Image 1: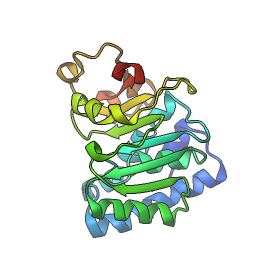
Image 2: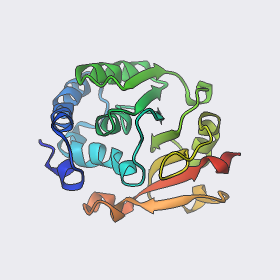
Image 3: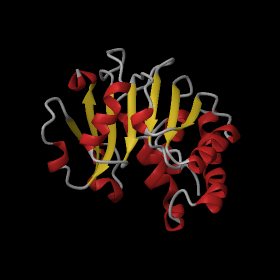
Amino acid sequence: MDITLIEKYFTLDTEQKDKFGALFPVFARWNERINLISRKDLPYFYLRHVLHSLAPAKIVVFLPGAHVLDLGTGGGFPGLPLAIMFPQTRFHLIDSIGKKIKAVQAMADELNLENVSTEQVRAENHHEKYDFVLTRAVASLPKLAHWSAKNIRPGNRHRLPNGLIALKGGDLTAETAGFDQIQIIPISRFFDETFFETKKMVYLPYTEFS
């Protein structure tokens, strides 16, 4: 298990290489304890979880000092891989399940990710403001938009205006209907592995919520 797949698509410095390399053994150890992902998925860790989590980095370069919320982080995705990729950006990872947040914070500590903070809280009860809200397969898009609208501050500092980026899969026709400013971006545009053929990023700018 190595980071060759990540290096195929991203240029990494030494520290990033070290942390991406350390992520798997740290994660696998915690996964033994609380089953963050299916054990059948572990051999595909860098493909299905790390590289997938890094897809937003292909459409926006998070700036130093930016604040990003990982809504429903589960086992730390997409927040932990993105925090390694963007060490000057602040990532706040939330989940309603306490044991998952405990594990994610422990992993962040072991990897010395000082730009990561965590919190056990339900999405609808979290009211802080961020440049971007990210989420991976947590709920339907209307529900995600409803939850995150209060968390996105207006702004245009990045290549994309502030907004929601949701990593989704399958047929999105029904759940994306009714949004005026939506962008649906196939991840296969950036990564050529078969796994990404049905994977997409759904982007809603902050103006969608105003």
